[in-house]
Amino acid sequence: MNNDPGHRPPRSRRVVTVLAAGLGLVAAAAVAVTQTNAFGSTTPHVIDIPTAKVAVSGPLVPAQGALLGHYYGNGTIAQTDRRIGRKPAVHLTYYDFAGDDWIKSQVNTSDFADGRIPLVNVEPNDVDFNDIIGGRYDTMLTRRADDAKALGRQFFVDFAAEMNGDEGWGGHDPARYVAAWRHIHDIFAARGATNVVWVWCPNNEDSPDSPPAMNYYPGDAYVDWTGIDGYNWGTSDRDFEWQSFRDVFARLYPQLAAKNKPIIIGEMASDEVGGSKAAWIDDIVPTMTGAYPLIRAIVWFDVKKERRWQINSSDAALAAYQRLARNPYLNP
Image (cartoon, rainbow, N blue to C red; front, side, top):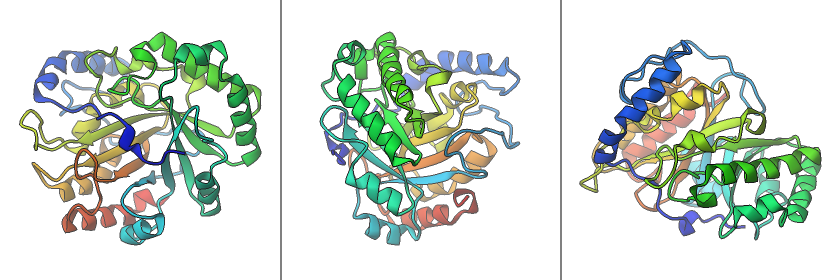
């Protein structure tokens, strides 16, 4: 099992020049959603999303509020939970598709025993998606499906996340990606592993050589939760701009919301440089309740990696995160 995402290439970044170039696409997507009478919009910063609660159902969707999740890259689970002041409901871990047992891992076993929901992020490192489609991994996948069914507990599987970003899983070929996803899903379904909750989670931005995120969508019958990974990179690079929580997810949220499925923020964090990280954190729940009601789970990427993503990168940030963790909306 690989629980250290340090091997992963850098995530896509919000660059001011890219933002300007992409406004036409954003406006077009917003207009398309507006035609469903669900949203009205013009740009990512002013998307008008109704404040009324949106009814959405599905596996692992809380009856009210949203689930708080965590990636433990900044200390042990026990140390981090003491730092937070509570136990998050969802535990994000990373696994290699071909090399790790991403079902019968000790981490998953411990999570279930401790009342956590595993969020299993499966990375197809050095895997040719044509081999998945062609059946090369069917024996392994059948075993994983049988083991999942035997667990008898629901948990999230997030396969090949950020496919539209720098990860480039499947060579930025949406048809190949969708075919591989469906092949894996079909094996699990055929083996009766219906307790697996399938999460499809693109990056909040498309890399320059990638088709748009929604081109990779496997289809409603193959996805239980949609998702987004996104970060506020701050302004330590002169080409970057400070983004609020709302800004980070504004472009893709309306497109996912049109699917009327629960949305998970599969990875998120903020840097310290360029604004108030504490205020950024304090704004999360008000933005979810007022603008992004279909977000029903959020997962903080708690590690010092490309930026100071840790919840305790400053005393003010930690205090804000502790307030976030106590918020009734995240304690359903």
